[in-house]
Image (tube, rainbow, N blue to C red):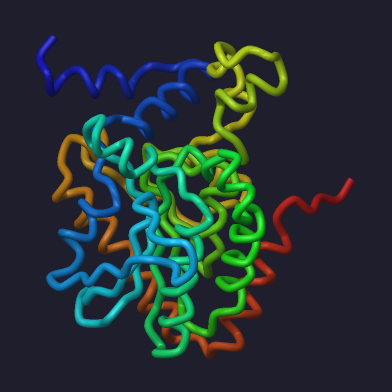
Length: 281
């Protein structure tokens, strides 16, 4: 089988268990573009900001300002590493409280200066280490969500890989939430879910099926607003084209959101999340 044929066959596989787990594998593909890959194509002059002005800097979160299609935008995203050294440095994209406080610095800056906010989600979850908990991990996640909910500027969130647990939701509160075609969005990683329910992380495939993490499932549940197509075979096959497609979707959402009065945007944003999880029997 030739290399171009392999991903197409991979994507054609069917079956409930298979579809969910294949989506997980594609979302985690080591060659998928990460936040910095997209920002290098989105912005000619991205300026990254570092540090939370309290503890230090967290490389698992990238945050800063850049010129995006004629306007200044505040970008915040998770960043994984390509090789083992980079993955250790970035903590595999699992932020500590310092990372979320750095993100909040940029959110507040955007609010003061009137810049729209775009977040790029790609994390297996917030770092669960003892030190992170001691420094207020859960509080940092909650404050980040609260801050995003109250911003007067447009906010667009994009799932570009795996979006798991509060680590993803911390930067996922937005007017419009997008998912790339072959990404996942879940309340917990499949391995974490399997370890809790069946005391066996090896049941991750079974957990993935139950979690329904795929973009079509999330759209049907109303968790997201739009699925962004990817190049044939997945975003890892063509970073430039994937960036163009995602950039077009972000630009269109920002253009629409800019037409809404700030108070109306905030009202609709709050209403959007209040509707989630509410069902009539």
